[in-house]
Each structure stands twice: as C-alpha cells, then as structure tokens.
Image 1: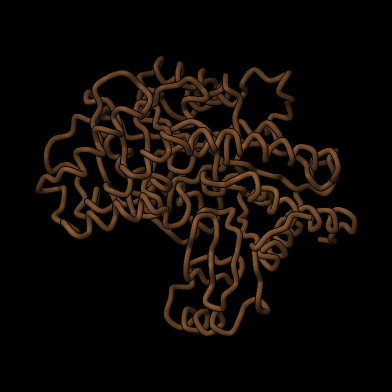
Image 2: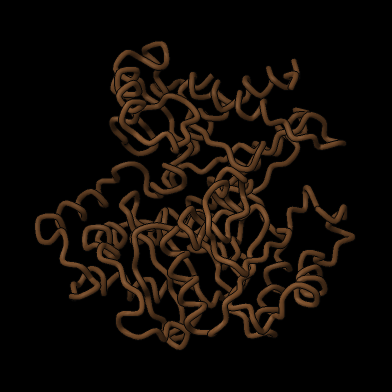
Length: 449
C-alpha cells in the first residue's frame, strides 16, 4: 500500500456545494454537454483537482488532453499574468503583436518538415479543422474530402462533415458538406476485413484506391485526406507505421493534400512533439490545438508557404492567436522541450508496461495500446469473441471517480488515459492502486448487459 495524501474524498459524492452548483447548471446551461460523473472543478494544481467541498482528485484526464503542463503550472501562470498586464486583445486579424509572431516562428520550427512555413491562428481544434478544409479547397481548387470511420474532427459544420464517431453528433444537424467519403481506419484489433496484422497488406488503403477512387469519386476531385495519426475519440487506436507511410505516398501520387489532425496527439503527448514523427511522415497541413496553451483557447494550422497561398481577407479570426494564449503557448512549449516530452515517453512506457501485465491477468482487458501518455484500455466480455464491454467501462470510470481518480472513456468500450505530461511514477502507482481492485472485481463477477 502506497502512503499518500491524495486523492482525498471527504464527503459523499457529490457533496452539498457541488450539488448546488449542478442544480444551477441544470437550470441555465445547455443540455447538449455530456457529463459522465458529477465533478465540479474549483481549483487545479499539477495533476490534482479540488472541488468546492474540499475533495481532492487525481486527474488522469488533463481536461481531455489539454492541460499538458498540468493545472496552473507556475511558469505558464507567470507568462499569462505578465502578458495580461500589457495587452489582452488587439486582434491579430488587423494588427500585429509580438507574441503571435514569436509563436508562429516557434511552430514553424517544431512542426515536421524542413521548408518555409506559415501559420494560421484560431481558437480551437474544430476551428483548426475548418481552416484546413478551406485552405485545402482553396489551394487545390478541388471540393471533395476523404476521412475515416471513427474519426473525430470537431462539431462545427465542416469539421462535423469529416467526423465519423457517433450518430448523435450528426443527428438532426443539416446540411453538412457534400462530397465527404469515409473509409475504414486501420483498427487492427477489430479489423473490418477480418484479417490479422500478419495477413493484412493495409487493406484500408486498398479499399480507398480500388473501391472509392474507382467507383465512387475521382481522386483528381479530392482536395485532402484528413486523418488522426492516432484516433482519439474513436478509441485511442494506433495504426501500423506502414499505413501512414503508404497513405502519404498515395496522397503524393494523386496530388491530394494530407491533413494530419494532431489536435489531441500533438504537443508532446505521445513522447514526441507530434505523433507524425513516430511514423516518419510530413503532413501537408497540420492541425494543432488542445495541449498547445495549457488550457487557454488556441488553435492553429501549419503548412508550407506554397500551400498557404490564400490572399488577405480570404480567412481570418478576430480572437485567433490572442496574445495571452500565445504567451501561454510559448511557455508551454518551453516546458515541453526542456523536460515534459521526455517524461511523457518514460511515464507512458512505465504505465503501458503495468497495464500489459493486467491484460494477461484479467479477461475483460482485451487490448492495451498507445504511445507516450495517450493510452487506451479496451474492455471485452471475452477475449476470443471480443464483445464490447460497454457497461463495464462506464462502471469502472464511475467507481474510480468515487475513489478520487478522474478518467474518461473513448470509443464505445475503451478507458482513455491521458494525464498531464508532468505525471510522476508515484502518481501512476497511486492511480494503478485505485484502479486495479475495481477492474479485478468486475472481471470476477462479469456484469450482465
């Protein structure tokens, strides 16, 4: 048993102050938000979240992979304070300010590819995808797109057209962009072609070239292929390295732009600054958000100056590249480069090693996958048939919350593990100590669905 001061649950969850806030939320806030358990975050410090009733939680969500440097890192907070005292807003659309220029220069240096680049700033991941859609179409003069089943690229109209994650995200929202075709993602644990990795010759790409491009749409009409190098919302699915290499070759062949959505995978999460680096590919356009500014709203797309050839007034954003967000991003990147990317790799290796041991021990753990601190644990009823154990996943997350460990799901039956990149081995050991008895108990009794 690890001696620890956290998590610390002082009240029955939810506590009285939390209940009052949730009741007010129910009255005034849109019902479209999804809340898996009753957490009210009042304060954040490193990998800890404090609620108004004094309960302390160990956060393995990082605000959905956003607070890459942990909650309220002193270096980030100081950068925000200093910038807020000088300039809060002047709009980078019509004027210039140094933090935006400095961040653009930094992003041009750290993104894959040794060529002259340009950066467009926006406020979120969905906006970055929207910008990439527009730039792809503008540059190529083509109007069609390829995306992947299971993908999540955002909820705004253009991004939603590419999203193939859940029906509820598209139901009753029309119109969406016409000419978007979705193909299978290389989800090797659940191959749609019923092949094993040793017998598969990247059938997903064969399907694209032999079926979609020959029977559905001419590749010369396709502006871009959008892909997450690791599918996020779809279940933290890591494709074979060869898949992305061959996909890039295919896009080159047909002069289609490869847009890599690094919104969740980027900014050090996978143990490299960008997940594309694991696969040895250079995107034509890269979409960035989430972990870029440690929690402040900021998104960006980066491409070569040859591709980002749109003219003044063709696309802009009033708040995009806000000076405070840019200052926060510069401080974040400094921390990533100095220590946190390396920690993401070593901590991720340690965590995956321990989870793999559980995979051998507990029948309900069908697959453990990930890179760095982007890890998925897929739950099944039996390993042979691989039936999705949806209720077990949801119960594990709920029980972990009650014991002070914050987790999220992804896909239908996968536990998403994406803590801040500041996580320590002690934090991981505490999380494992909380989580294993819950998994062991459910594995033993087998929930009836």
